[in-house]
Length: 151
Image (tube, rainbow, N blue to C red; front, side, top):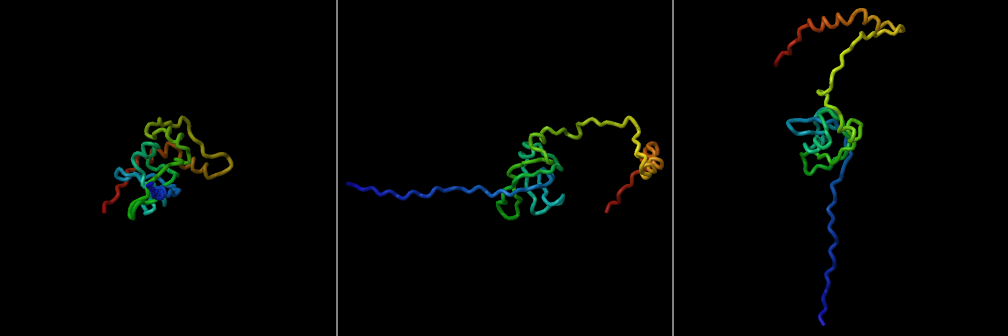
């Protein structure tokens, strides 16, 4: 009789998913690349890279405040990639996708004069007396724009 030896089964190899870190930031598009600025509006090493596909998928625009999760950076010097988006400007993704484009909105112009005074305070009344609508419009249109000096 021939005895066969069975090799011990190798433990299953599991590829661990990269750790995700909660992130919140403001979308900034620079030269075709998008980043979620996590510490204000300036670039920093803690910023998160947002792919063009995610920009299209979630309907993100420059200046949107997002909250989501980012994977850890693969190597030094690279930005962490954005893994998922939970909210856009405090709204769920479904509502954020349906936002109108600002340039497509129809402007509404005032049809009547806005009175600042309410009878109880003098400051708004004074500004209405000193700067009536017609005076503000004529001053604003007659003032030339200053040019900035080039350095």
